[in-house]
Image (cartoon, rainbow, N blue to C red; front, side, top):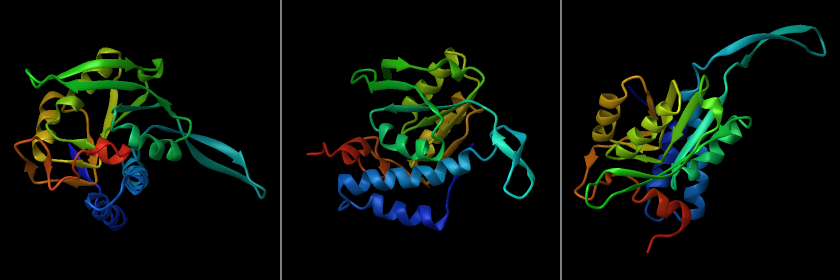
Amino acid sequence: MAELIDHPCVQHKLAIIRDVNTGHKRFRELATEITKFICYEALKNIKTKEVTVQTPVAEATCQKIDTDLVVVPILRAGIGMLEGILELVPTARVGFVGLYRDEETKQPVTYYERFPPQIKGGTCIIIDPMIATGGSTVAAIDKLKKNGAGNIVVVCIVTCPEGIELVETEHPDVPIYAAAIDKKLNEKKYSVPGVGDAGDRLFGTSH
């Protein structure tokens, strides 16, 4: 399942982050801002518990989050979204998965992984600005599930039908939340119209 977050504030920021003239500083700021909006929706159904608190006037029955949250950025571009989630949920734990694409097989290869034990029984949020082919996303989900994760959501800024289809085929239980669902992939496996190379644009490493 892929859910498009089409709130006007999100779409306004998306227009700016797509712009080729947006520099890396502003790109990072926008990635943080957009991530907060998307995660707000992605976490709307997480488990809560009823608590009673004392206000200055009287007791109040309230709700508090009742699950461990673990954010898992896919290195390196996913780091650019991490601050947005941690501003929304400062107590979330953070895991990491590093992947690169083998030039011959075109398959994702893991070069680093580190997960807190709370992925078992908690809610894991995979973050990556772009889901293009979906291969890295599927590989990250595979890694989490092999380490005991049972509740996983994916948050991205831009995706496309090809990426959505692969994730839904391999992991139909994992929802995707995105600010945009683009038309297609081009021959270089970039989403069209996309944002270009999100990692380069986040960290100012483009040539």
